[in-house]
Amino acid sequence: MSNSSSITHFLLLPFSGTRQLQLLHFCLFLAIYLAALLGNGLIITTIAWDHHLHTPMYFLLLNLALLDLGTISTTVPKSIANSLRDTRDISYAGCVLQVFFFIFLIAAEFSLLTTMSYDRYVAICRPLHYETLLGSRVCLHLAAAAWGCGFLYSLLHTTNIFSLPLCQGNSLEQLFCEVPQILKLSCSTSYLRELWLIVASACLSFVCFVLIVVSYVQIFRAVLRIPSQQGRHKAFATCLPHLAVVSLCVSTGIFANLKPFSISSPSLDVVLSVLYSVVPPAVNPLIYSLRNQELKTALS
Image (cartoon, rainbow, N blue to C red; front, top):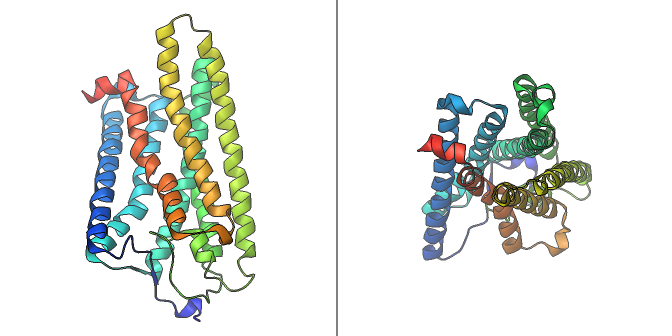
């Protein structure tokens, strides 16, 4: 038994007890991390330097790339370093910062993805009203609101989580400091306050997801009226992968945070965390660049 005031560090879940598998984990996650850095870095640099891409849509895409870079940089480097050095430790302060930045970036990204789907809806379904409904100034305010809401939301969550008394040791069954794993260490029913906050968060995430789906339904209806088959194919090829990644991220994130502790297992928790924290930042650059002719031209 231990008290949260006496905890100086946490123990993360080792990928494997075998050194060869630890090195395999190191190489695999390092490759994914470098790919995410390269892809998102290219998108940020291209949009920043090419004046033809200084439009609301690409401004939102630049913000998404920044959030993806931050999200994957919050969790993966520490996991990589632990596998390389064959350690499990993360300091108490490091765990607090990891929780804060991860929640901040994920919350801001959900808000931004909702804004991006609305941007595409207005551009495709109501193009004549685009400047009125979502001009450069409005887009700037929406992006700032996404970052600000994510910051305040994360501050509330992190303060609430680490004010809980922790008396179930300091071992986390996860590759990074994840909220459900910290709640497992809390005393008796002291975690119920944070649990209700997580439920409310899941409901808000689901509302954002519904808004994204509704926007894309309207977009698909407009695309189906396009006489050109090539135009319809291009629109679907761009929208469907993005919607699939958003669906994967939302569904796995909600399930990881709301599933009962009784069905929790280290392998299931690791798979879920990778699906909602590592896959989207690595895949988003491919979705937004490979199907975007303007971005490919600017990159070349």
